[in-house]
Amino acid sequence: MHGEQLLNYVAEIADDKKAHDPVILNMQGISVMADYFMICHGNSEKQVQAIARGLKEAAAEKDIPVRRMEGYDQARWVLVDMGDVIIHIFHRDERDYYKLEKLWGDAPMITVENRLL
Image 1 (tube, rainbow, N blue to C red):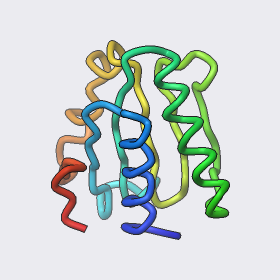
Image 2: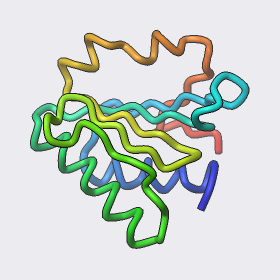
Image 3: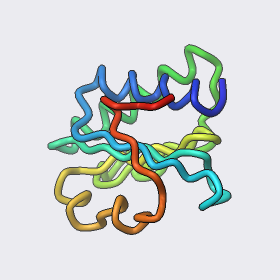
Protein backbone atom coordinates (compact mmCIF):
# COMPACT_ATOMS: atom_id res chain seq x y z
CA MET A 1 0.00 0.00 0.00
CA HIS A 2 1.47 3.34 -1.05
CA GLY A 3 0.68 7.01 -1.64
CA GLU A 4 -2.93 8.08 -1.54
CA GLN A 5 -4.21 4.63 -0.61
CA LEU A 6 -1.90 4.52 2.42
CA LEU A 7 -2.84 8.09 3.31
CA ASN A 8 -6.54 7.24 3.31
CA TYR A 9 -5.89 4.16 5.44
CA VAL A 10 -3.90 5.97 8.13
CA ALA A 11 -6.41 8.84 8.17
CA GLU A 12 -9.20 6.35 8.88
CA ILE A 13 -7.21 4.67 11.66
CA ALA A 14 -6.39 8.02 13.30
CA ASP A 15 -10.06 8.99 13.08
CA ASP A 16 -11.06 5.69 14.70
CA LYS A 17 -8.71 6.52 17.58
CA LYS A 18 -10.34 9.96 17.97
CA ALA A 19 -7.32 11.99 16.80
CA HIS A 20 -8.10 15.70 16.95
CA ASP A 21 -7.88 18.20 14.07
CA PRO A 22 -6.17 15.94 11.52
CA VAL A 23 -4.55 17.81 8.65
CA ILE A 24 -2.79 16.41 5.60
CA LEU A 25 0.07 18.25 3.92
CA ASN A 26 0.86 17.28 0.34
CA MET A 27 4.66 17.24 0.41
CA GLN A 28 5.16 16.08 -3.19
CA GLY A 29 7.72 18.33 -4.83
CA ILE A 30 8.49 20.03 -1.49
CA SER A 31 10.23 17.35 0.55
CA VAL A 32 12.05 14.13 -0.30
CA MET A 33 11.10 12.62 3.09
CA ALA A 34 7.56 11.61 2.17
CA ASP A 35 4.71 12.37 -0.21
CA TYR A 36 2.36 13.29 2.64
CA PHE A 37 2.52 14.42 6.25
CA MET A 38 -0.48 13.86 8.43
CA ILE A 39 -0.61 15.97 11.58
CA CYS A 40 -3.03 15.38 14.43
CA HIS A 41 -3.09 15.55 18.21
CA GLY A 42 -4.39 13.93 21.34
CA ASN A 43 -5.43 15.68 24.54
CA SER A 44 -3.35 13.46 26.83
CA GLU A 45 -0.23 11.29 26.72
CA LYS A 46 -2.43 8.19 26.85
CA GLN A 47 -4.44 9.31 23.83
CA VAL A 48 -1.28 10.17 21.86
CA GLN A 49 0.05 6.68 22.60
CA ALA A 50 -3.29 5.07 21.69
CA ILE A 51 -3.28 6.78 18.29
CA ALA A 52 0.34 5.77 17.62
CA ARG A 53 -0.22 2.19 18.81
CA GLY A 54 -3.38 1.94 16.69
CA LEU A 55 -1.47 3.06 13.60
CA LYS A 56 1.34 0.59 14.24
CA GLU A 57 -1.05 -2.32 14.85
CA ALA A 58 -3.13 -1.46 11.76
CA ALA A 59 0.04 -1.29 9.67
CA ALA A 60 1.09 -4.74 10.91
CA GLU A 61 -2.33 -6.18 9.99
CA LYS A 62 -1.85 -5.04 6.38
CA ASP A 63 1.91 -5.85 6.23
CA ILE A 64 2.73 -2.16 5.88
CA PRO A 65 6.27 -1.53 7.12
CA VAL A 66 6.68 1.07 9.83
CA ARG A 67 10.18 2.36 9.16
CA ARG A 68 10.41 3.91 12.58
CA MET A 69 8.43 5.30 15.45
CA GLU A 70 9.96 7.94 17.68
CA GLY A 71 8.74 9.71 20.80
CA TYR A 72 6.26 7.06 21.93
CA ASP A 73 7.46 6.83 25.53
CA GLN A 74 7.25 10.59 26.19
CA ALA A 75 4.03 10.90 24.11
CA ARG A 76 4.53 14.60 23.46
CA TRP A 77 5.33 14.29 19.73
CA VAL A 78 5.24 10.85 18.17
CA LEU A 79 6.50 10.43 14.63
CA VAL A 80 5.38 7.34 12.71
CA ASP A 81 7.23 6.86 9.41
CA MET A 82 5.40 4.65 6.94
CA GLY A 83 7.43 5.65 3.90
CA ASP A 84 5.12 7.63 1.61
CA VAL A 85 3.26 8.97 4.65
CA ILE A 86 4.75 10.36 7.85
CA ILE A 87 2.32 10.85 10.71
CA HIS A 88 3.03 13.45 13.41
CA ILE A 89 0.94 12.83 16.52
CA PHE A 90 1.26 15.66 19.00
CA HIS A 91 0.09 16.27 22.51
CA ARG A 92 -2.22 19.29 22.17
CA ASP A 93 0.24 21.65 23.91
CA GLU A 94 3.16 20.58 21.72
CA ARG A 95 1.15 21.02 18.53
CA ASP A 96 0.34 24.59 19.52
CA TYR A 97 4.03 25.21 20.23
CA TYR A 98 5.62 23.68 17.10
CA LYS A 99 2.95 24.66 14.55
CA LEU A 100 4.16 22.29 11.81
CA GLU A 101 1.35 23.39 9.55
CA LYS A 102 2.91 26.87 9.54
CA LEU A 103 6.47 25.59 9.18
CA TRP A 104 5.47 23.75 6.01
CA GLY A 105 3.14 26.56 4.92
CA ASP A 106 4.09 26.19 1.26
CA ALA A 107 2.62 22.65 1.19
CA PRO A 108 -0.99 22.35 0.03
CA MET A 109 -3.15 21.53 3.05
CA ILE A 110 -6.03 19.10 2.91
CA THR A 111 -8.34 18.61 5.87
CA VAL A 112 -9.19 14.98 6.42
CA GLU A 113 -12.90 15.69 6.09
CA ASN A 114 -12.32 17.20 2.63
CA ARG A 115 -9.71 14.80 1.22
CA LEU A 116 -9.43 15.28 -2.51
CA LEU A 117 -7.90 11.86 -3.05
